[in-house]
Length: 90
Image (cartoon, rainbow, N blue to C red):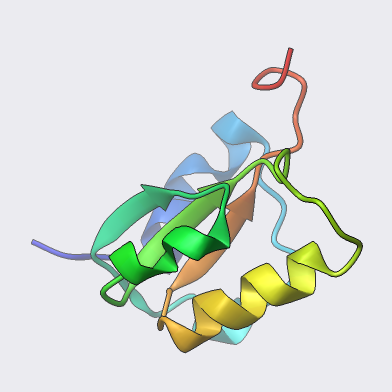
């Protein structure tokens, strides 16, 4: 059984206070797996259609987010959640 990113977003947005910043046209993508990823060097574990979740705590340069997103696109990830909430980071 598969799920589309749109369905996951709609069902969890209020509870987790998610905000869609970009990619509204890509929400129809199929989601196959959720991958927590802080270091994009581990992108070789991605097989396609994964939803990546990160906090960005391991960044070490100003361009980390652009590089991170570029690599996720190369790996055919279906989406990215950046957790910046203080309910997760204490």
